[in-house]
Length: 169
Image 1 (cartoon, rainbow, N blue to C red):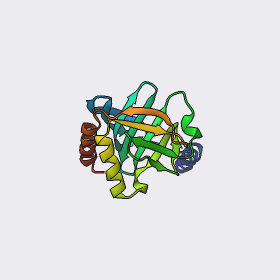
Image 2: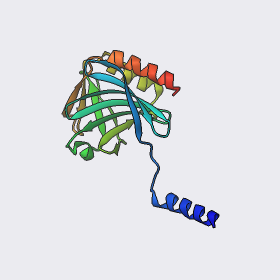
Image 3: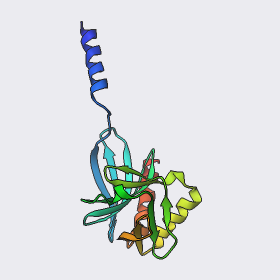
Image 4: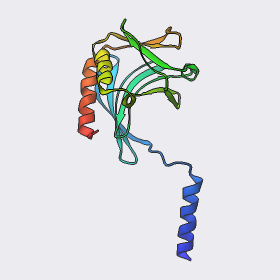
């Protein structure tokens, strides 16, 4: 009888809960400079993520890395602008724009998978962010949606790299 109850409970748990996603358990600010901060997230499943982010007011730009993903993402509070875009496009200062024709949305975040590009391209992009003054989020017609200060980005990227190395990603 106990086996039957156990099997029933397992069946119930497996089929009634659509997914078991990790929830943020702890957030630790590792570094802050200018508009930037580097954060270590710890999840309840004991996984971690390192984030370098710039978020003032109702918008946020971030570089997110964990054991499975490396992403660049932008989020806006109370706006559906990301849902209207066919491409994810941005530029640093007056340099040529970077884009992906296959971004994806997750809870309002517009996300670019950095692992889909070559290592050389990702290094070049990160160097532009480190050295730049401003990052511009562009719409599908190359018009500026918003901008993010890159003041403090060089030091933040250095701290992000330290976090990634310490976490073994």
